[in-house]
Image (tube, rainbow, N blue to C red):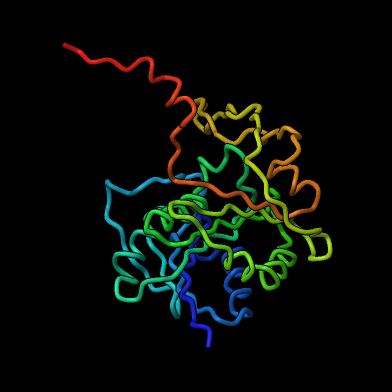
Length: 256
């Protein structure tokens, strides 16, 4: 008999996010899992791997096996592992489904990816899930894709200190053509900071801009999703640039 695997489910859009509920409902349709949700109390997009160090964290009851933490996505996984689930450790971490893509350099900013990366740092197989459209409305295809293929993805062994970043095209299931392994793409932001005037006539700035412009490079996560495929991108904790590390050894010296 296959053992029941315990999933820690988190996100960066908050405990009431639609994408999180879609993921919960999809997992309920897949045999062999039990789920504990520990997610931020409110919206925490683009919080990256931030920890809350200047104010207290609180755990709030959000329903059966559901908890909200008044902190960042990284805080939620840390609190889950060391407090909420200290005596009932999960077998893996899923973070998402994010309301928008997490591709290319944006994985550095992403709270969704950070929650999964925190799970990786606890030694757990961890996965970030995102819907690859800004302001998405149709999660139906993503839900069906996960019911059909998540178990297969989870069965592939994750090396230590790695995680898998998954971006799913928006729309119905029939529009998803398949899965592709993809490297991180590259994008440029234009008009990132908007100039505003407050009611008192004083200027202020708002980060948002007109959104990223992606380079259309084959083999990237952006192009995979653009062409109707789910992109799978392995990421790792160790961000050492090993080639440069070796070439720069000429700078090594012993000082007298």
